[in-house]
Length: 333
Length: 253
Image (cartoon, rainbow over all chains, first blue to last red; front, top):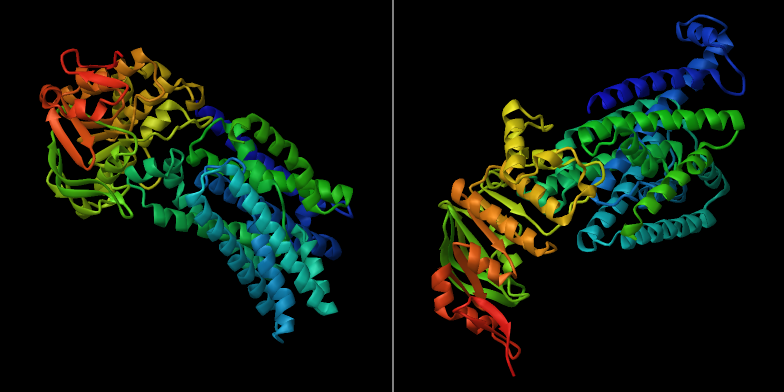
């Protein structure tokens, strides 16, 4: 029974390694495996070395981190809200993060706050976290009172629409320079993360993942619903705060530096469930993280081959999975 | 043993039960009956610390409820709620294993002893053969048995069940209550369940707790039948209760 998971874990890990290598070879200039290896060892052609290390290596690392982060945040939200269609993008968490970033990028110049690259990196991250946390807090508060899945999803959509309206107002009021840097952010991709930003992104995502590992047992108890979880000794308030904190760090950070990436958070936990045929988060959480990393690496490779933004690829690959989930769970509607 | 000490129960301005001082014994199966909306679930949830009483004190085996931490509660009271658990890929054995949560480490690692307790709980509800089935492929009666096995795996002296017989057909209702009765007697547990099945309560339970707003009476079953409380509560313009046959029937015009 468990040997299936062992084999799958080994396969997925191998796949991450292979795709990681492939992701560094593919791009506007093809670089052979030998050259990539040489560049990573610090040898080879200096231009190739620069491309491999400064651009592709970071991008591949970001793809792994972001894929794992989005998938784990989606998994946690689906369990916490007991809603198979929950995910950072659908419930408006990514929008909340976008609003935070918009307020920071467009608002800071209006208030005359300028500053160093470091300040803007921390500012963008902080603003995204606050925005994501605010939306999550609202969704969590509402879902406490309203158990209807559709109502929560519609509220998430409304939150997204409301946020984009506010963002448009901000854009309308902003000067050209701020507007340009915001528009570039919205088109954001995995490749926009710089080495110095990675120094913030990686620890934030790893912290989020560590928190999510610490709540694995609680997530399993929450499968049975809040009442059952509480009668089995779960401290619901603490658990809820930790899950929301972890989701904020994971989804907020990714949105802040890679722009809004849809459907990974919603679809990948379901792919992990199908592959592993398990509901235990001790299996599902690492499974979702690995599947997320694999998926985003694949999406990145495809996006480089077709020269398209990665958001479009995740959407096109994620939508069929989401439709399948909706049809299979038609009783929930 | 559950002791109520001058309890007032309700929500907001509405009082459901007041001046309740009584004891529910261990080693006995007690049915909680009453009309709709008279506070059966509210009382059960209060005992499980999922809700509050307006005033008074509930004592579990002599410990006041408010002094018990969530983890102490988890080894004292197990609750079977009306929530339906129909999660794909969630195997019955895993659900029952969750009952060991109060005793396992931070990630929920099961020791040999825990595994043995889970298998024993599955066996005592007659569901050993279903252990590897997933919860979304079970009938209501089977699900209910698994949830009871989970409560047994929690190894608590007190088990509360909120309408466990709802959604079950008649043979299943009797089988389930016979199972609860056997567990109460053989394992000396204090089992309290709410139900609308008066005939089951009167034929299988050792005691009956009856809510006649704003009072709650707890009496051994035979005394309850003789007390006249049941007639007063369940006789309406249409139906009447006959203490001789212990049944409710439609009044003859």
